[in-house]
Amino acid sequence: MIIERADVIVTSPDRNFVTLRLETSDGHVGLGDATVNGRELAVVSYLRDHVVQLLIGRDASRIEDTWQFLYRSAYWRRGPITMAAIAAVDMALWDIKGKAAGLPVYQLLGGASRTGLLAYGHASGRDNEELFDSVRKHQAEGYKAIRIQAAVPGLTSIYGIASNATFEANKGARYDHEPAQRGAFPAEEDWDTRSYLRHIPTVFEAVRNEFGPEIPLLHDGHHRMTPIQAASLGKSLEPFDLFWLEDLTPAENPEALRLVRQHTTTPLAIGEIFNTVWDYQQIIREQLIDYVRGAVTHMGGISHLKKTLEYAAQYQIKSGMHGPTDISPVGMAAAMHLGLSIHNFGIQEYMKHGAATDSVFEQSFTWADGMLHPGDEPGLGVALNLDEAGRYPYEQAYLPYNRLADGTVHDW
Ligand code: GCO
Ligand code: MG
Image (cartoon, protein in one colour):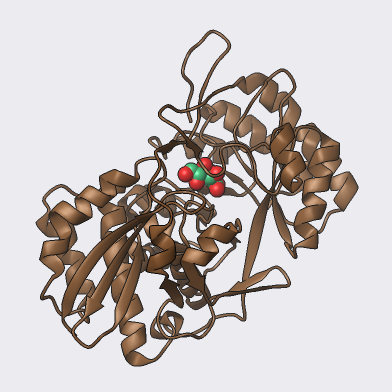
């Protein structure tokens, strides 16, 4: 099982995706997701210019050895670009191993630990009425757990909220900048943490009054608070029994969560921009979080995220893998196989991809009754339609950024 061919495919059906496609001497094809939202071509270069030539002629069955070789031989370790490139190779090799064995990847990882994966979707609204519509739309699509993001009075545009046109088009199932906005410069939004902290508890109170106590509700703070502000938010949301509060403080200072923990029992999730187990080491050991948000795509692949989650399991910390649409269908499939097999699965984020994306990536996962399942096709269960992929060339796109009222650039 020798790797004979390695191609990096960039396609932009609803958004940009970077996919590594490996072919072996015995005819197996393996796919890996290497998409880093807004910085896609950096990973393309890392793979095309530095990795592909190292793969040709290697034994495709040696997944762990290939991971260690790519990680340790580069000298420059960690970081989103390196770890997404390694992740793509790792995913593609698991895909090939599954195909060679005639088994879905979750069987190679130990088999199913559950019947399906509880998934959450993203509801949003400019006011409570719109937000309720968006929650109802998600419930009608089967979602049993829902992330709640709401506009803040006085702020004209904030991330994660559908504006007029977007809301009408899809009842809040997609928000502005989802997918990232195409163009040569990021869009600018505004931000004010004090207004946000005043407003959000009123939104959760209204949602609980409307939808009752049972439904798991989540919220994303997008790294915008100081530790004491985050502590205050966690405390003020306690009466509304959140499933988790995500990314409250900037990820560079994970020990900031110590102070948040001292003040609130609201469960905490972090790590969608983390790349390795070392980013999590301290916060897992000190039990400063409840959910690991890392994506297979950004955490060095199935092999490395599995190790991270097994370390987390020793501390009763569960998975909450990142799953917005910038995780490609290949990355989502990898998350589903891993999530199905580990013991400490928590929840899976799931934003549906658009029709164009689904035509490029033929998928075999199922979505029923609020649960995902990767299916039983050998490998990851995703096929890349090269003709369709070729119809959608790369287009530059950026995530938005935000400024305070006085013009200061704020945290993402
Ligand atoms: C999430 C994320 C997304 C990110 C996006 C950036 O929780 O799903 O925060 O909303 O903004 O994935 O690439
Ligand atoms: Mg997030």
